[in-house]
Image 1 (tube, rainbow, N blue to C red):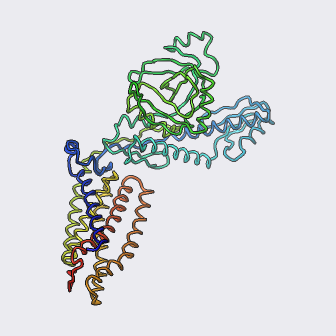
Image 2 (image 1 turned 180 degrees about the vertical axis):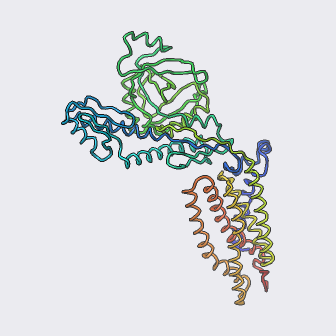
Image 3 (image 1 turned 30 degrees about the vertical axis):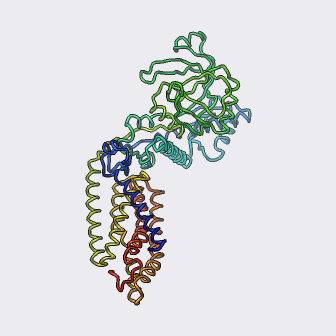
Amino acid sequence: MTGGMRWRLWTTLGAALVCGYVTIANFVPAEVRRAHWFLPDSGVRLGLDLQGGIHWVLGAKLDVAIDHELDHQRGRIEGALAEDKITPKRLALEGQRIVIETASAQDLEKAKDVATTGGLLRVVDEGPEKISLGLTDTWARQVRKTGMEQVLEVLRRRIEDPINGIQDSVVTPQGEDRILVQIPGGQMDRARARELLRVTGFLEFKIVQDSAPSEELLKAKYPKGLPDGTKIVFEREKTTNKILNAYLVKTTPDITGDYLKDARVIFDQRTQRPLVSFEFSPEGGKLFGEITAKSVGRQLAIILDDQVYSAPAIRERIGSHGQIEGHFTSQEAADLAVVLRAGSLSIPVAIEEERTVGPALGADSIRSGLHASILALALVLGFAVIYYRLSGVYAGVALLVNLIFVIGLMSMFRATLTMPGIAGLVLTVGTAIDANVIIFERIREELRLKKPVRTAISTGFDKALWTILDANITTLISGIVLFQYGTGPVKGFAVTLCIGLVTSVFAALVVTRVMFGLYPGERRVQELSI
């Protein structure tokens, strides 16, 4: 055996042993794996269609996006009129309309010109000294579309978070204002998933103006009413909702979570309590440093959705990094970090449809897929052995090794198996022998030309190489496109297809060549069993 053939043999055996070891996890019960340290931890993950889970259809309240845009436009109009020294008698939102009242018709005309500049607003109703404006149909559609895209992005980042999220979940649009969410069973508690959807995630940092153990005691300090531009927020016990402290803060935040770059869970070295460590962007770190430098000795309230998580005292200037302490568990701290990393959900969503998908259908599908795979394997192997004799046996060995590679690689990379993925596995079994057929027919052509057996084998593999690569690379490109732009089951099919294509080519070009290297190898035989 030549050095190159020996290298192929040991490479193939090593890869097959590694993939075979990882594959064991798919056939050994979890309790047995946990009881024996030398067994692999986990195998292929199952998608929602195979193991069941949560199926939600969410409705996005996109009218809120329209309200936000109208409020933004109202501020723009107010600023432009102030520059022209025009003070309207009334500039307010009424429903989904901006109402402007002025002291004169001339001021009204000027306000109309300012409002309609840019073509985003249109006049809905007009009187002598009053006009009502709404968004143009084109801009309203764009605002709703943008709002939907923002909701999708935030939900995906929360549910599919790379650290504490679910990698196999599906978050995809369904119509113009609905979102389909599917979370495989056993990976996320239903209450936790609901909380991730409910929390708006608007983070604010505010310097505390005053504090007291209760709202009544705090208000008692201000018998004439709270100072202008301030409000009271509360720090509550997580389980009982009991008020722990009341804080007087400004209505406008000193800095918001828009500047956050990262957030993750750490543990206090002394008490081992979970904390959330956060990091600002360079711009946010500079702003945060300026705020804390001016407020040394005062408390900083860290507020999420109007609830104070903690209010630590500022002992020195704080730069880009900080910590959030609170009365929460490790899981609650992890979920808070997920929300902060994902950003605020400015448009609320509501669960319109909720179903629990059971695993019974998945068990039937796995059983049917297994039977189909065995039948396809038996038929393909039978054809190969009958038609190509000993070479067909080599192709069968390559096909079995290929299956070990597919399942092993899917287990190693924690790929998700779905119903279409099972179809992809059956397809891989059915088509994996194609490359061997091409090789064998090339070898036959060389043998018909009366070439020696060793030369025929070598030439056959060389001539088949580019044909095999060309056919499989084009299919692989299609699989990559499906994986990139598909969701859920489609992505599961693409994963199985792509892995199966790569391993099929390896099995045909390397494993089968190793078989021929073992026999006939360097022996001088007169004919080949093909």
